[in-house]
Length: 117
Image (cartoon, rainbow, N blue to C red; front, top):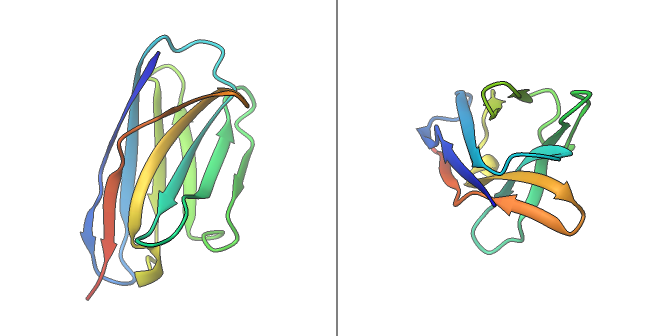
């Protein structure tokens, strides 16, 4: 099992920035990719950004391209999400994900990001 703990969420004004962190522990082997997902009230969970563990290749949801940056530190078993120019529609619970395969995914409990004046 892999345990994931997110941190860094909070209340921020529109246009502001936050940095989310995800700390991984446990049986961290054969992890192919890591990512951040979010779920807003009344909506389905959606992919925000993901990164390939080995190559560092990334991809982003269109709604966050140019504003969010995902990164990882394999040595420290950490994944980060730098969020800039935040908008009210970015308000959601953000979840960290580690993927071993299409059938094996690990999730954190989430951290709440609220963008409001």
